[in-house]
Length: 139
Length: 489
Image 1 (tube, each protein chain N blue to C red):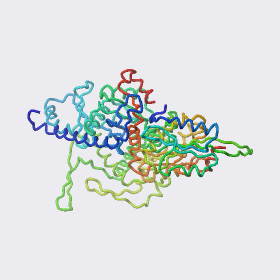
Image 2 (cartoon, one colour; image 1 turned 30 degrees about the vertical axis):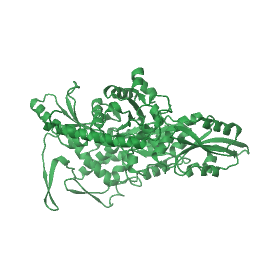
Image 3 (cartoon, rainbow over the protein chains, first blue to last red; image 1 turned 60 degrees about the horizontal axis):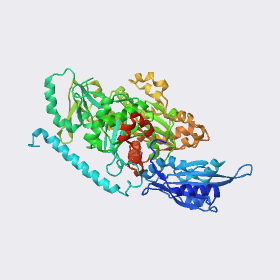
Image 4 (cartoon, each protein chain N blue to C red; image 1 turned 135 degrees about the vertical axis):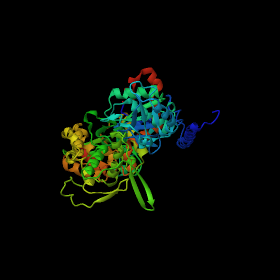
């Protein structure tokens, strides 16, 4: 256990939806948010397989923190079709300190619940999770 | 009280203050009551929204204390205390002390002669108590190189924070303490023991400075550069863990820079007169007369303390990190900045404005200041800020180096120095590997930069879900002190 973890629980739906994304590839992405009322990480929204990376980034609020997973399809230099699952911790600079603290201190535990994440990104502004960076990390 | 005695007046006033404090907190409680929390987790809840937790960050220079959930600490006071040796002092001093006791209860003075046998010292804690000059009063610090060495002083500081500044009963509030990233297990156990056994706190948590800073900026992985009063620490944090092997510290912090500033001014013939050493009055409107006072029994450490208070204000008001490495010739003709000392003397500060902050980047610069010769022994082992950052990152796993380079967090009191962030970023871009994308982040808000550790602790302790994470008194009684290593890893 990491030092100073918040102790936030994870809603079962998060794990189920993630499993569907991973095995059945039913979704392109899932956005999670922390519901402080029930003290759980919950699923906020998800995107269907035909949606693009732009559709995904549009789902992240400009001044609130979120977690997200994205199933990224790409072609390697050897012309080989591949996909990788990205975990993104979105904590924009303009969000409130409380929200940043809440999401950062709950991340470790949440990530452990999602088994099968291949790449992890933390982003504080859109440039840190641009498509180029995502591609760079995937290959 | 059967009848009101004149020397009880102070106590009455204090009681009033305490009641007012309670009322304020009650209001806060109501505000934060968002939803019933106790029913979600079947675990025993401590604090929660019944009583607010207390967050305490004892740094080498200042102690920050306040209620969890607030956005800045309520009490900020020096981490040094004044101490007067009481051994061998005869009865007439004792009676004098009795007379003083009324005012002392307000000023945060703790008499330690009843419970300590080793040395009968009377300790004066808090800026007010320290601001008053006393004969033979030495100024002592409980912290050396970031580690607590004198627990009696720490005890007196905690006591002052709880009883004189926050006006709370420590037995009622969970305590979240911030600790240095390199704190040893023995130190942590000692802390837990003191908190549970002496203060009888209901629950305790020890959070690491670097982790709190990192989380408060929304990052679970980052390189925290914490430049405080007594030292500068560079600590990589990965997924909320401090990578202990890569933590680097250097003794160059705000106090060292203040010292350099002072010595540099002295070499130019400017002596800073401590505030107690003169009286200044207005003889005619707009015209002042300064009369020097002489107190032969003032200790050297108190004189230095008082001078440093002024020197650090000079530093904070005029200093600015130079855009490129400092060189004597390039800054020889820069315009002077005036500064008015408390005694009315106006001094002009030129190159020192830039030279002093540059010591952070190039410590050997300090050797060129007359009077800093004592630094020569340790100078070769002390590196500049950019070198420390690169060395620390190179000690980490290759896989996370890229991420660390792109999230370097600047925090601590000295981080508020103007242009420091820009200069560090520039130096790092020059010295880091080509592929690395260097990004230095610092909160735009000066309060957030200075108190980032405290703010992080304040939010954490106020989270509803955190209430199950506390190391409770019951657990302490059942498992003993060493359990702190498991509860607060």
